[in-house]
Length: 341
Image 1 (cartoon, rainbow, N blue to C red):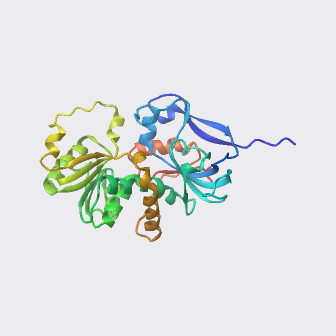
Image 2: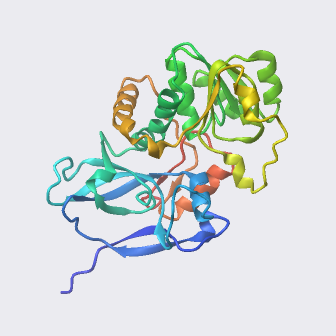
Image 3: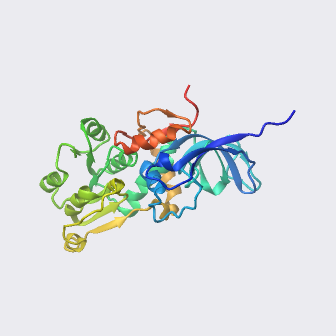
């Protein structure tokens, strides 16, 4: 009897296009045994990074040079099925998380063991902590230089990254100002420990900050850009730090016209600063941050909130990306790579 070749499916970026769905194809690939230094992981869950995915599809991420075709996705968690020669950090049956680009949107991943990290169990929660949680902690502590009791503003506070930022700042005794859209999301952010939540759909963020937090923000973390970035910048305290972790508004494709004074006028007299956060340049801090996040979660001090949408299979990744871009999600968007029951 002829042995049937084992295969798996993955999403491959095949063309440059306006959307992730238009740019990609689902392909079937042969499974392979790990070589020296490699492990093979059968993925169960993957985390969605819809803005990054869309910009990759448009070839608009300057720091990632892609050569078509390429595989996609960053983060996935699964079970180690096989271990190559020379690998001592993983054993068959371990939970392993991929945190490297091209490792996420696939049912199986055979790659160098150095591209994975161990987790206590194959769950959505550990996936979110190992990737997005690490980003939140490193952004706050290493770039924002957060201190206990400071006043901290966070945009997109109900999102996958934002909900971790709010909790981590609150755990440090900080006064957290969250920005979110709509009553439901604002109530969610409040439940995470935010002292003040600004509903940008019903309130003018700049006016609220100017009235209630004039020159009072010690740290602000912005992933949206545009007017919210400007409002955070205008209300930094002396020695305040504005951390730029993204620019979601860039997805609209409209050229940004800046009519305000140059940034020097905003930061010089306060000795404030604007700092870029690029997690991939801070890998030396990942392991320590991940260990603390796992411990906080296991002690019940940090909660992982998952978006309510239920997506299954490789096909569900497209829906997950579009869900995140719709601004309807709260918490981390995760896809179960198993088919729907």
